[in-house]
Length: 198
Length: 321
Image 1 (cartoon, rainbow over the protein chains, first blue to last red):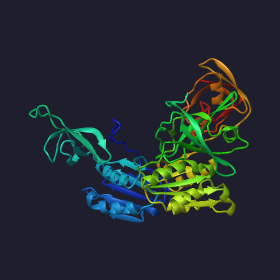
Image 2: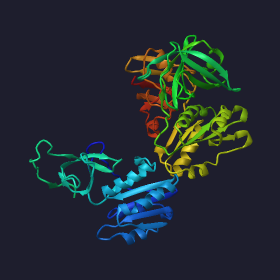
Image 3: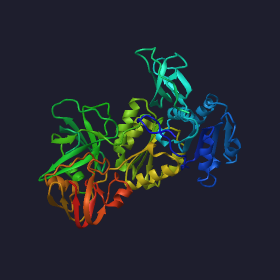
Image 4: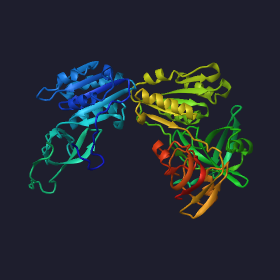
């Protein structure tokens, strides 16, 4: 569970059925469990107007469970990048009354939220639930490169190679935590690298 | 004391009757300088010196925010109200020196919106006059749906049609024209923000339908200045200042507190902004809450009151003021 620290560090809730005309779910891996648990509380026929977009984890689990909810559309994608064009298309054709539900890893929630913000949905009106890995999407504030799936503190920038302190300072616009050089004064000083975001 | 605002010394530069009920007032600064910048949806509180009595009423600025040489407000005459609008209609003439507050905006546009959908009822059109002018200047995407009783009471309907053509849709009660609200709300592109200003019943109807149709509350904006309602006189003890005062039947609780020389904070004087929120120390009787600020839970708890618009009936009321 993501703990509250500074104000920009995102906190997540528990998915709950919202009044609306259409319901769009985007989930990865164990995020499927959040949808299944919410479905138990949803009124009958709720998924008749729902679309579920799912990125299975490496174990390929939960696909059948989501299909059994009977959504109007079920779409499976190998990665977030691969579903991005479809998501943008869906949102650009959507009307008010569409509700968005994001569940799974922080990277997935953050990137889907970034696209939805650009489509004009306020971040506080999206339903979110964190499930699975705490791995972070990190922007190096020096070279601006994004490193995916950061699990250590400090972490190495996959672009410029600087050793970065992964901050709780988060950017919704970039969908990334900020990484700041941890040894700018003396590069020979190498603090131990620990598993911080399993 | 109006929170964080300074007063503006103005002179009435023009008074223009618009129709049977509505008159427009123009204000310029007495020193000839430009007025402060404002944004569409802002209001000013106008001080009316009526003999012994001072009235402070909020009115939306309806001129273009691009022109700050003058401020304009439109006042609908209310023959059974507490007299503020009648004072404006009868006694305010060009050349009169008046004092108004700095503009305050509690009904501003959310400029992140992809589209602005505006619903006006009656004199609720005034903030939209400024908002549409602001958006038109920036090439903004808006659509205005305006309900009025009759064509002759459709204040500024002709001006708006002239300026914005098909972006303005009119509905006349006497011709039984009604907004197909559910259809309108269900066909708006994602990223639309909704703005509603008009009678309380209309605002509640629109907010309820929007919520039921899946509009998040962040995308629904509304403004309704509740005029303080007259009622039975009642006595109040102000615990902090150690005074006991009587609120007259035509007076608001806030006005009575001010008349006793106590200076509580305020901004809108219409139950919207929350500035004058006051804690109740004890009471024996019942509250008549008229504000849009406190939650229903607050209303039920008997722990808080908005003295600008709400009243009390009963044996005793002690406020932390």
